Length: 48
Image 1 (cartoon, one colour):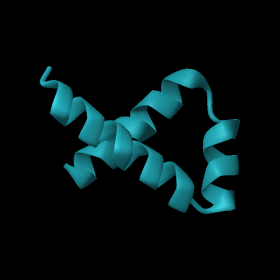
Image 2 (tube, one colour):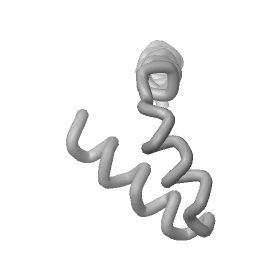
Image 3 (cartoon, one colour):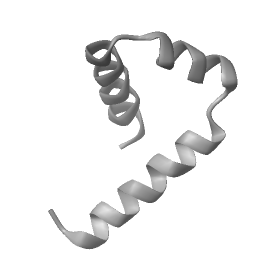
């Protein structure tokens, strides 16, 4: 993967993490790892 793209994605991920609502954070923290991955892919699919 291109380093520049990876850096950009990482920055986007941080931005999403910072702007995430506490309720959403609590919801994701309550999920099992597999569900968490599914949710992450769904969110990324919507954004990119």
